[in-house]
Image (tube, rainbow, N blue to C red):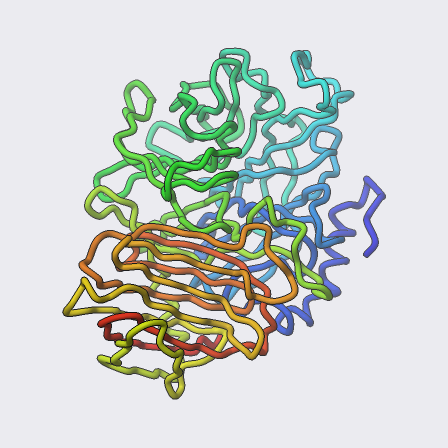
Length: 510
């Protein structure tokens, strides 16, 4: 694939390039998970409501399926399932964002325009008012926040950019790790949370305030890391939910903490109270946002009917070099999820609009899976497919005898994705070791479910290259990508001990 080199026409070149691939989109892409029309995609950006549609931007390099100089791709939807792909919104075509248009937010202004607040990656030789000091020896860039305003398709970057310099952060904040604003409006003006790494902490969330969304001033350190949660905190998002306040972040280089947080780049939430007088967040509880391996960089919005909807990049930075051959794109987002707080926990379930795309219902009740020893796998008529929404309910009258439940998905003679439930340990295991010739770097993921004395309700969203699990009506969610051949569509079951199963399965057609 060719790259664009003319700095004067980078946006036009990106738009012309991506337009050549719009006809092939439905042939190779996921069916109901949003992905780029062509090229590389990572973080979702600017998830917001504008003129009645829900807009989603995304980190984007159209010219290859590997990470490159970041643009902003653009799509919109009315129901979170059917996406209309719009021309690329931003390209790194100014001296202050020459090294990339990194993550940010979007909001509708009172005058009917859409404002984009994004992280501009600035070369060291760009002259700004504040000096560039104390950068890591290997760094050749730093980050500032920039503004573009437009009509939902075309955006003009402000001549005064960058509008907020990294040097505005307190406590000798990092000029390299200053990024990922998320903007919202309150009665007294606009607010934005921003990621930062200070000299005193290994990650913090800063709060800024503006009267117009353009000129910003520092407000407070909203929350700092005490060393317990990784290093740099990325992609902050603050909102209220069921009389609680929620702060979402994506920590880098997290150390493993039991089965709650896996090692590496993760996403997590603090649940507590945002003190609007002191502008600080008082965390009462923390939990993983998603217990799978492929989930990072969350964004949320509030719908016109009052729901809080979240989306994330369904990928792991450690596996970014593992991809199928022959595809013109890489990267996809999770299916959008409705959020709630229940019993002090964040609850996630697929947006209800998916039910309108279900086809060909297949239902079985009280299927007896009981067996002794290892038992044999078996199938059920009509329970197969690669693009589906399926719910399994397991139950037992003898918890002591129920040792394990096995489920093979995307199965053929040589390959399968394996799910296992261990009721005595309250653990779900996802095993990708037999998914095909592409071997994932991390093959096995685990998470715990709440004790139900041998019962489990598991909703499964399966698409061409991914699986998302929702346990016990959204108490835990887990996301994984895998690359078994699309033709592998078998589903098989096995129970070890006394266990019965109810199952509902739908094909998804978009």
